[in-house]
Image (cartoon, rainbow, N blue to C red; front, side, top):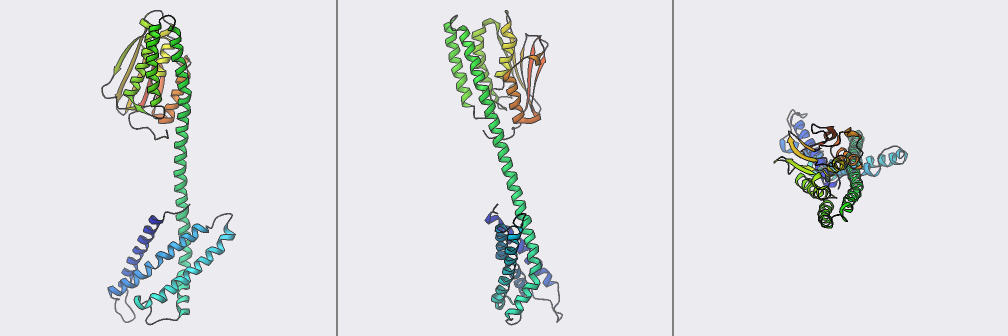
Length: 356
């Protein structure tokens, strides 16, 4: 884990600049041996020079902590290197004070090298070890943030992979059922079969265009459903009558692709196709507060709705769970028409981001 250079430099500079302000304020509040307060210019020069001299040394210490972190399994090797780095910084700061003293004025006159080294060791050794601890805390915090980012990316990738797997399971299933419907009428009514193939082509084109997209506008999903119901209407004739109850404000709400088709297919296969007389399929879509309510209702097949088998419904439940968690639901309920209502509730707000 490497700290980003420019943000690190800005943060270190800001910290030691604030330290320089505090040092200058402290010097201005203290009286010297002669009872005089240090002039502002001299206090600021010494305060900021002492603080800013730590900027390159702090960056050097940060580099050393990244290069030789004190952690389990490497402590015996890295502790001597860290100790040597701390001593090197003590010496470097002493040499910098000696070189800059004529302009800054830490000492009256030029001090001896041994005097400055001793003062640097006494004043900075404990501070440097505290800084070593702070640098480790900074490094570990950066590592934790990076792990969180990686975990979030992995979770998004996993969610995307799951959605792609579910889509890959759904599309062959849907294709098989559509072709099976066409096969039922190809010898009885070739013209109807031809129209069904045209509708199937439009349906597959629309489906493939959205296969890599986790969500699509509801208007596109409704258009795809119309293609599917066109195919089934040609197959079933008068046994299928479709009624649309679509709100005016729902077209832009985003939903999973192929959300409604499995519900319509379930109603047709388990209820309407088994009837000899006319059957009714009702498609509803409306907003209620922050949620979009969708329903596909049939008027036949009075058996327990949940007893209806269906790979598509299980797949749809898994996709809704993957995208919206507990905010979405799918229920099969008996209705007043004597049939079953498949009711879906999804949030109108954007779903969790997933990799497509």
